[in-house]
Image (cartoon, rainbow, N blue to C red):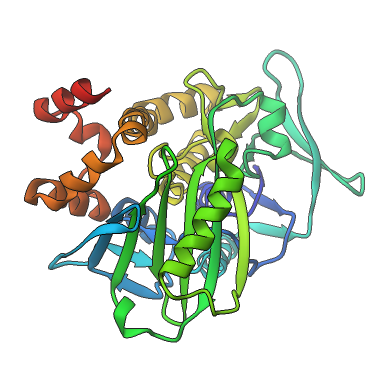
Length: 368
């Protein structure tokens, strides 16, 4: 098996397949450890998936959350148990790389893939990746985990229904006591936008996300957000941005002997744009499906059974959030709303399960 992309989705797929006995190679264009724009907050589902692969290199445990609406109406809630674990993506991804090596995976770094294809009769008997230097790597199954703008998504014909842009700065702040074990979420004025502050020991990750069409306004939002927090005098360790793309319902998850996992498939939660849990879980599912007789059918069924339902629920919540962010802010102040938020952070509740409850469905219908 061959994997294009050495992030969480690709490495989870590689570890899964290799542990099951498959000869596996990962083709990664960069070199670990490498910086990756990412909030880095691991919810319970992410921690559960990662725990089967690695010992998670957590920088900080979070048990409190502060919420603001357009910078005002601030309140803070604290939970008796950890809500999130904070990671730095270069450390997290490198831990996955080491797990892949331990499982017998060949990890080839600085191996830039120019194109991928299938060959053979019918749906294709093999898949291949052509590197920029002309080398061709052939495998029974190829898993694309090179991002939504990568060559594998283009080859399979992935379609995306939602495109957002996330902007982020990492600021050097050595263990500030006011941020110990606490995150901040700010619901933004731009439709569907929000900002965050995530503490990671020696740094704070501060970012905003929203619709790509609001790019210039999002830049202004981030600048205002940093200034409001009194952090504008710090020189960022990193200042970056990235696109997130959510798949359309009819977007293919594979073609021939090629499967798409993680961002390449557009698998992430549409409202929060949380992607690590989807990357890890889809990678594991792809690694398992790659060992079956009909990988695309097996993988599509597995994704449809779980991840697709969570995405559909997140899309419903985003539709309401775009119109009524204050409604979400007020809901989180209530005991029921806070318990739901904590349960989702800890992995005991997903959006699709939450929306199975009659009151939640009725509220959505009222405000949609």
